[in-house]
Image: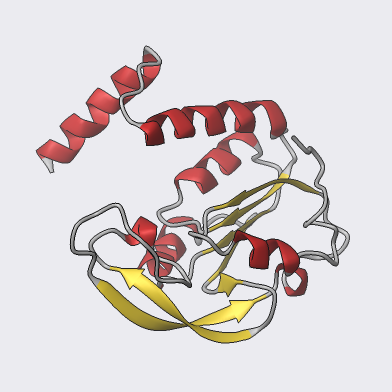
Length: 182
């Protein structure tokens, strides 16, 4: 517990001084600049591959008047999201993976590195990944996001299934454009 606090504290200091040690920290800083530029107070945002909710937190902070949709297929992570966000009336959580069709699929849950989990098994940047196949529901973005909603920003982190996610969002023109394209 103390170790986690110390790590979080050090990261916050490094972030404050814009010192980024890892490539992931550089990506996170770039993404944050995009969020700050694109998301407005009432923007509606979509977090695909919500994981622990870090990006959803940013959506809520930057767009408290927007409606936010979050998707997380890993059951234990989804349950934590439900516990954390159930009191937000503007957050809609879905326990499914997104694709270009509905149904079910085998999902590769990497138990010792959950962020690497996805619909496809691939090369992992860790030694000895512990992969547990789990069955997950598949949905299409078009079947969940109302047609009349203006989407301000979509964050997709699905470990290689981005094309299928976007193809499943073509009805609302999500695959082609959003409120702010860059």
